[in-house]
Length: 255
Length: 236
Image 1 (cartoon, each protein chain N blue to C red):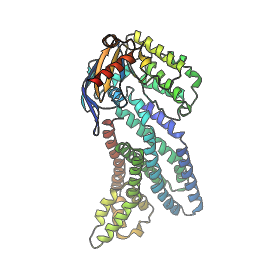
Image 2 (image 1 turned 90 degrees about the vertical axis):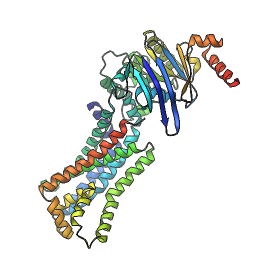
Image 3 (image 1 turned 45 degrees about the vertical axis):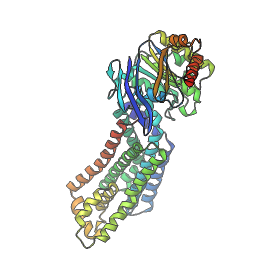
Image 4 (image 1 turned 60 degrees about the vertical axis):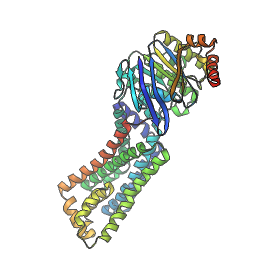
């Protein structure tokens, strides 16, 4: 397995798109922090970058890379290697390189400018979000053989999690505003990895006071250590589940 | 050595392999021929475990290959169109395969004869189709496998390299290896193969030794024998 990981990482790190991604992240985060005198404001801006650009680039790049390595996978399959090893090697290799790009691009300024706790937490969330969306990309890549369809599915999933889901939540909140739905909101938010990541960071930034009663309920749940552990486990689960389903499919797939 | 029992494979509504059974033994050099889309490549991919058959069993040296991967150590496969990670150099690809196979007995004949050492620093994406074929061929023979599966080996190779490859196939055949070749160039197969399988619509039309084929049809070239059989079929 280590060999495949090594080769995938070497291949991706030489990829121009990943270099540009790292560069854009670096330019954005350095400029955000040096333009804003208040580090909380900078963090909020950067949070939106992390929750939009990182998943978008991860999911699209991983899907395209997956389709482009179809022949490489076929080559490996004709060698004495388990299918599971090929798949996990690709996943670990791709995730490691994307996380590396994220840490080099956004991680360094985060650690320099942001307060230690929140900086580390944002770094961790960014890494998890990268992994989650690579796992989702793996899933959409095994769902269809057509590259265009696969990329389409990936973009739709990103759109759903990054934009549509929040809209749906808002819609639900307005429709059911007469009912005590605050506790249910915690559950519904936890179902979307990006909402979960956003809430986690926002609560650390003490802007949750602006979220009213729902914010207080969120603080009650996500603000505690147990809540934090549960949310991070949920994020990890969001990585494992799509990957696991893609692996099941890959094992039965014709190439 | 390789035994296929009632293999069927469907791609949606299309039947690629239809209840196909086949036995191959060591020392044979088998040509797999048939019109485009008759299931040759699917058959090969089934043996390699790249395509999983819908029904039936494939035995390699008496063992079922489903859920097994170790048996591929004994197979060298040259794909029809070999594509490799674009950013890797020829040297890196060969190194990677060596690391994966962990085999010590390397057969570097083709590596030397194709003069691939001179191209070791070239990126895979800059190689021409023929040079990529040379890399594929080298990789198939590199680990001294007992079984060689060559999918259109000479397509895209220049005459000189094609001759080198044919010589190599002959040499391996003499060592008692099982060799499976698919090709559309029947004239090239004449001095290579001992057996011939003609496939059509996912079924084996006939599986004969070359002597029997030539004797039955009274021709001395494979291409003529086959066209005779196909013509006589049409008249019936």
